Image (cartoon, rainbow, N blue to C red; front, side):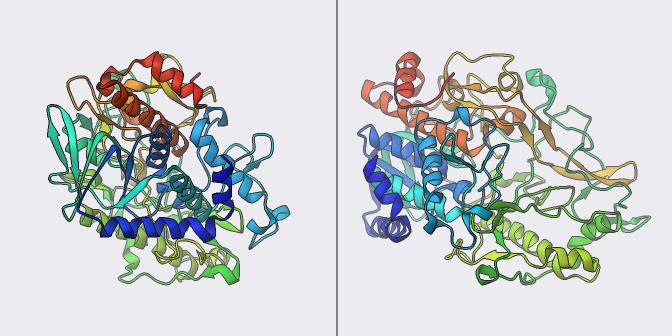
Length: 554
């Protein structure tokens, strides 16, 4: 690993340039490419899959939708949701260790002294000297680590997005090639869908679902419609009508007349998305938030009423990363989550084409920028609140080619595969063990709100679930990351895997994605070597290789 460390230490000089050059040369190359293993999706699990396959001696192509590696891990999710760091092993541990080593250097601290950093993370120390892991880090640091990893491994990167009409060329139950927008064709022996949407999985005809199953389907208690949320809830007494007290005036935007069913019933609603904003209060590195073009204060009427009902703060998180930057996630009843805006009548985020997703992502961006501007400037917001938030702006040294805004919207959930084994709440609670684990999870059963509705004459949120687990890791089945027998024989799906809505709420975390990406690539390489399908890979042989490569399975 000495070569990797050398790359990492010079990352801000070399890695970005190398990655850009790779993208440019790929774009100028012929419209048809081939490799042993083809990974669609440049998020964290796609990177670990690509690196693992390359280390196993395979020719690898990683298709990058955004031109930036890391997905949410390098798009503002700097406060890592781990649950228990004991699950980390293999390439995932390499990543978090590299981030730790970065902040050991005095040169890494530009906007604050290391001694002034409070070193708090998600249930653990941000920079942990005992484990030598960093669970909190800046986005540009994460991206540079990923860039260094793929450069060292010799992964070929092609920038492009899947053709969502005819994206998979199939023959005898196998993908032979994928087609990108513009006509580029990428052929391969094995394919890994590392997208947050499960786009390649869908194009390959693999079974999937979207939304929340009824509790009765898998004998769960945390799935389906929840009723009024216990956490991240609005203040009581907020009138739901445009003219308070007048039902004839119509409901406020984004408020439903009821929750669409009984508690525990299933539906097709998605938990809310947001951007993990990176803000700073360091003046020389801060860009003030301007009023978004097309701003309409009516969109923030619910915010004004929440403030009038007594909300004084908690409009967005200010979880601190090094150098006085934040991972600003959703918090409270009205915050950065654009609740109910990622689905509608006959559509959801996963059914949209790329242009439609871009447009919807832009609406999420406008909502969040408008939220900050409103809290900082609007006269209906009390002066003490405006002053408390006035010092925050976008970080000038992050996302420098994207208006200092994160590359990836936090797609918390879209399609989920239905395979021969579906991970459920019982697996996550260690009530049912799996006999073929290829990774572990440990985080809370976590779902954000899915909708707002009228409850007892006032606006309430619905869908938030935060069921804390014991902290003891649980196994994630190999069968949950491969299609069921009789479906696609050469595809692995490490993120949009086979899990119920509520189980997915724990498994979906970025460290687990990295782990399962590495495991998926290992299985793909074994299937190539043995001339077999992913469904026929011998588990004990796979397990032995995963353990040898440092993954934690028990």
